[in-house]
Image 1 (cartoon, rainbow, N blue to C red):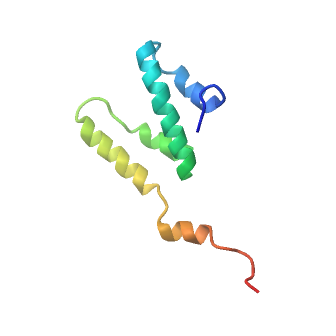
Image 2 (cartoon, rainbow, N blue to C red):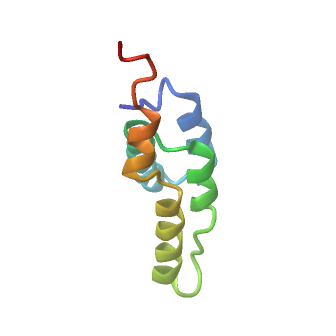
Image 3 (cartoon, rainbow, N blue to C red):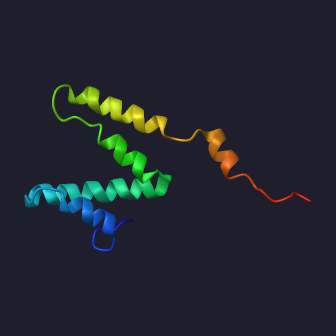
Length: 93
């Protein structure tokens, strides 16, 4: 699991969050969860944060969340792609 005290990425992300203690506490848990999920799933950091930057907090928020979800899912590899990538490369002699 990612630790906010030892991971520079998480510390940098937390630095841009407003100073409100309640928000910081919630956001630190959210950031830790996001980074842990990204680490476990092998998600590409650039594409994940690029996708999250599409999130609009005005207007129809649920539609915006759906758009971001679809974008992130489009970035995922298929099962066949993962199997091909992780297939043995040695000659099976």
